[in-house]
Amino acid sequence: MLEKDDYILATHRGHSDIISKGARLDKMMAELFAKKTGYCRGKVGSMHIVAPECNVLGCSAIVGAGIPIACGVALACKMKNWQRVTVCFLGDGATFTGAFHEGVGIAAAFDLPVIFVCENNQYAISTYWKDYLKLQYITARAKGYGIPGVSVDGMDAKAVAEAASDAIEKARKGGDPTFIEGRTYRYYGHGQYDPGNTDRTKDELEQWKRKDPIEKLYSFLLKESLIIEEENEEIEVNLSQELDEAVEFALKSPEPKTEEACKDIYCENLWRARGRKKECAS
Ligand SMILES: Cc1ncc(C[n+]2csc(CCOP(=O)(O)OP(=O)(O)O)c2C)c(N)n1
Ligand SMILES: [Mg+2]
Image 1 (spheres, protein in one colour):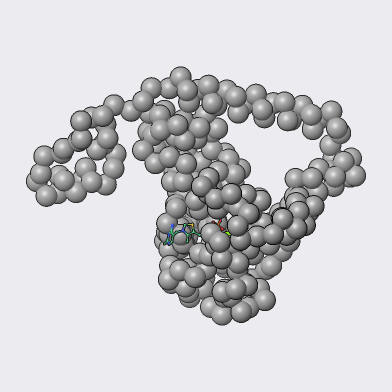
Image 2 (tube, protein in one colour; image 1 turned 180 degrees about the vertical axis):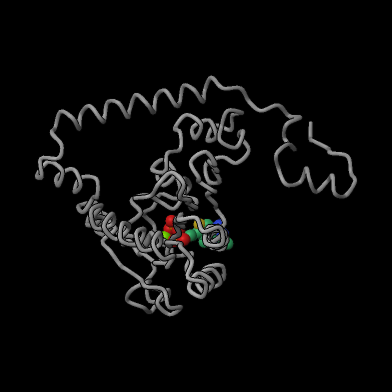
């Protein structure tokens, strides 16, 4: 299991990853609403949340951008002799970026304590992964650099957890990297603008929905008597209440002031370095 001190870097779909690392729903929701109380004071929105309090070092909509950063963080941990693990989430499409090949190559060469988790949801926007990759498993790309790769059923939470536990234990002990591919599926379109039905068939979607990981996990927990129906209902009610409270917090939060637009961002330092007066649009 990941500890509080471990680090994660996530993608443009990082909400669930950072919640599982302990990010607060209210501060996330406020960031989505561009409010001052958000994780990044309302400056980054949905896709670039950074939550240093729980070692979430950033989500990024720049495909593959987290990969070299994760390697840098893992290298720092190794140099400081910290037994900390860095997890970097990426999509199938991200394995086509230069950053992927540079990062994975460095992680292998330096035996870095980093885990690459590739959420292979079959598509990069509208491109089906098998139309652009003539490999049976994406893990082959990491293996080509000498990194062990594990391909698991990404719709099976138990299988994913087992693969993750092995990789975490290995990274924490000796600092070796692992690449995990989770085969999964994107139920919706790529983004809000995309109805999600132009490049995929209804049948394909229905087939994947029948393997829904939440349903599967719930059935497993019931079968093993690890949960009872009433407990599950209670969890659902509590979660829904927590979400309502987060939305209310975001709605009631103040907007950032115009004069704060150039604060806490890179260009403030850049302007200072160039000896120029900071100018904020009013
Ligand atoms: C460097 C870069 N190139 C292109 C884009 C445009 N873009 C946004 S998301 C995306 C697809 C990414 O696919 P994948 O890595 O499989 O992630 P998924 O959206 O499937 O989770 C692309 C090409 C981008 N944001 N950044
Ligand atoms: Mg994808």
